[in-house]
Image 1: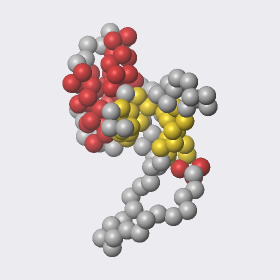
Image 2 (image 1 turned 135 degrees about the vertical axis):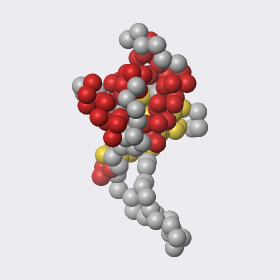
Image 3 (image 1 turned 90 degrees about the horizontal axis):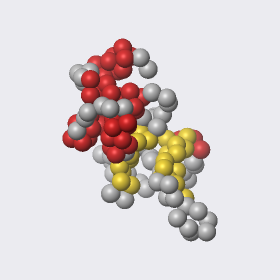
Length: 138
């Protein structure tokens, strides 16, 4: 993505395109969909000699989620990924290398769902499939 397209993306989401936000957006939105952690963003910034605080990274990721540009994926309450693919889909979590892979929404069939209260409506179904090495080794 060009600098201008990143600026437009942030502005349309209601975010001011500061240099720090643009740097973070470049990591996230260039080169296709991806799953990153805040630590991945910090490492990218360090490698590219971008001075950014951990607070700025977390704030920006949270703002991008609130704006609908990222989807937050929390595993076990202790590990959080940020997904640039905000369309409906599921995930395959590889426990051996702690990586996520997208599964198209139509690749999994659901035979039934619990009955909802009258004042509730189904908004989404997200399935996390976990896999590890067959021999159990790490």
